[in-house]
Amino acid sequence: MADAAAPPETTLESQSPATGEPLGTVPTTRAGDVADVVRGAANVQRLWAQLRIRDRARYMERAAQAVIDESADLADLLCREQGRPRAEVELMEILPAVETLQWLAETGPGILAGDRAPLSRVLRPFTRARWSYEPLGVVGVIGPATEPFATPLGDVAVALMAGNGVVFKPSPHACLAGERVARVFERAGLPEGLLRVIHGHADVGGALVEAPVAQMRFTGSLTAGRSVGEACARGLKRSVLELGGKDAAIVCADANVDRAAHGAVWGAFANAGQSGGSIERVFVQQEVSERFLRTVLAATTALVVGDPRAESTQIGPLVGRERAERVQGLLDDAVARGAVLHTGGPVSVDGLAGAFVAPAILTGVTPAMRMWREEVPGPVLSITVVDSEEEAIEGANDCELGLGASVWTVDRYKGARIARELQVGMVWMNDHMVSRSAPQIPWGGVRGSGIGRSRGAIALRTCAEPKVVTWDPPHGRPFWWFPYDRQVTRAARAITEARSQRDSDRDRALRQGTLPALRVVARVVRSLRDR
Image (tube, rainbow, N blue to C red; front, side):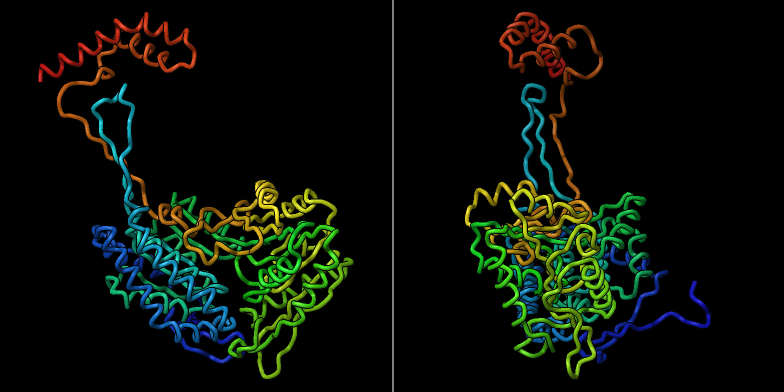
């Protein structure tokens, strides 16, 4: 219970991470009111669930058009609230949002259509079966601070497309972006109250997890994700958890070094190294290591750190000052233990109050250092020289997290072999973070990087409940109903042996099971005549 002398906040203020200036406010939700918000969404969801899937798809089409219509304004807001260069906002937030909504509109009805289920005609000659996907109810979505538009919009959209209501809690660092997610669907004509946005801090998120939601879709840290997963397990609720990553890139001796170096720089430092799937570690083979490091350093030092509103800026501020402090602590620990910092680290930008970190390149990082295992919340890339592909694979797998990895090689078959040995959810060859902007492909990791997938057909299907419906003729009785007797037992044994791979078993089934089977068939026929 809050202290009477310190009443709870009634509004949440959004501030620019670059300048610190206020951008706007939103009303907060009391933790005690969250369950009622969920129940309100559930009341509207019952009607939404009755819509044909193709009718829901039309809302996705209109939502995509709403994003396009507001794209200039959205890009300006996200640039200021997220601190991300405008070009990245257009490419990594706006365009993926449109792609996701249009893909759901085009392919969602087919994915959720269900199908007929062919059954064995030996045991069930007259049974007809099909399965379909039914909505879960209300889905809770908790969005991230570092990718505040396209990522939560995708979670909201798949839940709505599957026939669910949604209660969405944006990050308190991106509350205005969260409001724009809701506005997109409002402009699409979504029924009022089906999608509800709540604002607040960790207590509000915790209340959403404990509320009567059928599923939680969470994007955030490993620590917070563990708490969400544990709460969902206690309540027997489904959960999709997209947690931390410490992605590795493996640069083989035959790689196109120039492409690999520039790809690693982009994969490591886009979104100031805060993206889910940012490269944090490179394992490069000895034969190309000097050229690779030289090219990476040249490309990295050429990056401009500054105001994300300026067209010349490639690296904006971190979302919060605590991130910069954590980056500094990890760098200090690595250098104190013998690593070499070639460039980068926290910097000041004239006229701006934000927490800026120039892209950092480290070599000599070892397993004894925190940098080797801990997720880095900013633009830091450690480069390790290895003698073999096997050593690179071992190093990449030596981590609790397993989101994604990339393999840089001209040999597709070698790349596929390495991919099979990497303990991650996604492997990209000669590129990185391909799946992030491709709604057709599942996105998610293994081990400490989460549970479930947030893109692709599987994400849509996990927002629904498979339901099987069968039909049998209303007359007669199947032979396996009561009463049991010797003939039923021998007929069942004969059917089993007739499926054997051995000729002797099938011959025995024919000799010993034909008469019992005929008697059982006769019993079924008599039951049809007695109707």
